[in-house]
Image 1 (cartoon, rainbow, N blue to C red):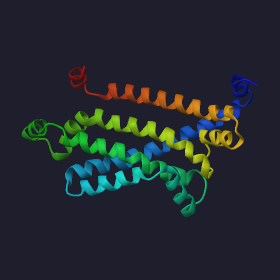
Image 2 (tube, rainbow, N blue to C red; image 1 turned 120 degrees about the horizontal axis):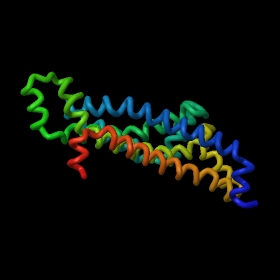
Image 3 (cartoon, rainbow, N blue to C red; image 1 turned 60 degrees about the horizontal axis):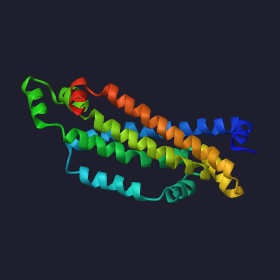
Image 4 (cartoon, rainbow, N blue to C red; image 1 turned 180 degrees about the vertical axis):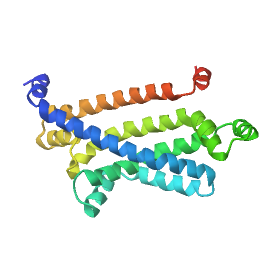
Length: 214
């Protein structure tokens, strides 16, 4: 049986795994964004604690995925919840770091000018700093998304489903078709999401900044 025939025969199973994989990635990235961007903004206003917080996030990032999933399995059990918690922890650092870096690197002349015309701190943040830092923030989201698409394949080990189920089935049965059925859609998904977020970055980047980056 060729790989094309295998895909045709197991289409429903592959599609179901792909949908679950997208759910795992989407939920984890969304929660990561909701945590990281406000926290990154907070750290730009309280730089004394920025170092320890970023260091802690970086330490979590260095822990192997299998180890984190093992801890989650022991503490929480199997299913989507522990997988989403672990994936969210991994999603935080790139978004957090880029949010902090993007805002702190905004030219001080812009913020001073905004305050000079009477803007409040909140107005300066939302009308000056975030728009200028947005390309950097979205780059962090893009990096995080591509990473999570890859790491989500491990979620199959704790019963969360996704394309990892197909890969682990293939590895346990020495069936390369199952491995490819999980690996190929995962790679394509990462490529598509990377392109879509890149397009979003271009759309949301202020026109003046877009011209300056050409």
